[in-house]
Length: 398
Image (tube, rainbow, N blue to C red; front, side, top):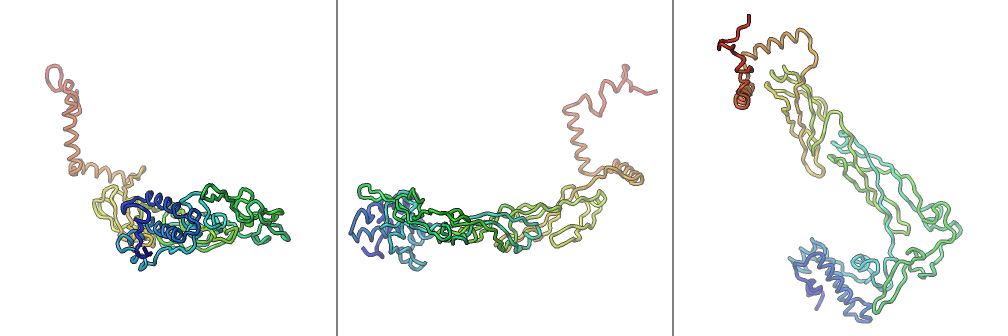
């Protein structure tokens, strides 16, 4: 069977409906079956070992699996192809975690021979709402570990150099044979480095890395919110042995605004208005992200009513959409009023007593019904037995 004719499902011995765990388990079994250490000199077994890794690469990736299920291996070739592993060591580099730390030897390769990636670092950045609304470029400062300039990353005191670890022979791994398998583990003497340092560098104390503060610019997209993490790829700790650097993750925090609160991409602003403004309507100043604007308050505005300004909220990151600005109105009742204001309000109260609003009339009817149903003896606000004298006549006040 040629590579073009191979069926990944048949090769791993699974159904097309197999779950990710079943695919992983089947690959592990197939890899153990065709592993070169178990089949020394068998080129066909080695070829199948590579095909099993290729099958696992495809079937464990939902997008590649979908293309393969639809169009077969030819479809994968049109969409960029698959691993096509030439070196068995490459397979360990990609899928060694499937087998765990005690993976059998891949032709002398293994985790001890792989370069180590630098660690990720984190820092925080606080922004105000106006910066977030428009997007901004900011400078951040943070500490990361870089290759020591005193020892150039060797970890050894200047004038000396690391010595090859005698325990593992410089491989960083030690090997034990158990039947047909060769089990590799990290060297306990050198910790996988393959070398030991007799005289550590006084600057980095043998680690090969020292902490330094760096400054970097980062572009903040418009519309981000507190809790968002932005990544600066390759700006984390440098690798101690020439591997890729880690990443820097920037955690965004947006300061509380004195006028606006945020709900998703909408902004909310609460504005107090007077009774007369609510009853008669008015034009008031309202804050927006672009400055102060005049908005109209309709006559008869009720407490809690909202005026919506479309498209005046926060933008949505990576989408051409903007939230709204919601002006929430509440009627402010003064605790102290001037005498002339009191006279006017008392006149108004007398007038409203003769001309009851529909909402009040409805509430009054409900109140009378409530009293007559649950407190019949207090109907009308007086006790029935006290409204008349003993003779049955109305109780008159002299």
